[in-house]
Image 1 (cartoon, rainbow, N blue to C red):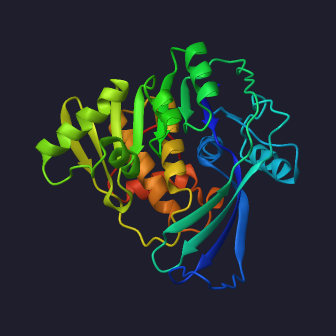
Image 2 (cartoon, rainbow, N blue to C red; image 1 turned 45 degrees about the vertical axis):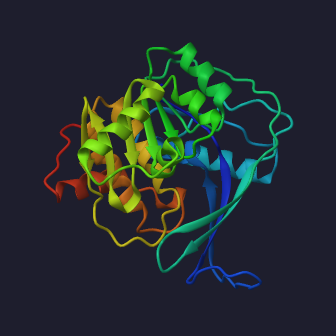
Length: 307
């Protein structure tokens, strides 16, 4: 088994409103998209669609949404045999409202009540463990059980549960929000010297590799002790739902295939760039061929990775 994704699985109901939301206002949404979602689930589906061996460790209920989630995993070739056993679980779901003018979104999540965490370890040792921080006990148990696996944390929000996982991760892939919250001030992007100080402060969390994603502004990361900036690929965004999840899934896929960190980031950046030109989360995942072909148009070639 190449990749094990750990964390949140939800069912998404996604609609579009072409204006800013205002209080005491009724909005009519004539069309919507429904599909399974959640950071760990979407990442796993990227890996499955791209042909990697991948399992998901997440908590879903014995309910209608749970059936749809499991059916969706099967369509993407994701192994669900290690899902968390929790009789008290109810499948989490989210209402996602996309701003049609900007492509940004507002998410209303209805989480599952959590009971005990009982983890069934994958039979085959994974080469990569990707955690979104939502199931810290399961994430840490897997990292202890498979210490030779490259561990990645998708750090979206600076919660203690995410920090607990991040402290043991080889790769801290943090959102801009996480960085701002952890530093208790905006990430310094004006000069390389100031940026280096902030990235080193973030590296104190895990003493490993550090990347901070900046949405349409690209990303920054530490290459040794040098701050490196990578711009985003230029696209016309209509819906950013799931773009970060797709980024992290592509990053895990790249690690599993032996790519350098920089090449993993190029692959991830293009995958997420394509995704924001489509509506939905799971429904916006590009194929590996699409990503590689688009990269070739920029003169970037990954020999032997795919067609």
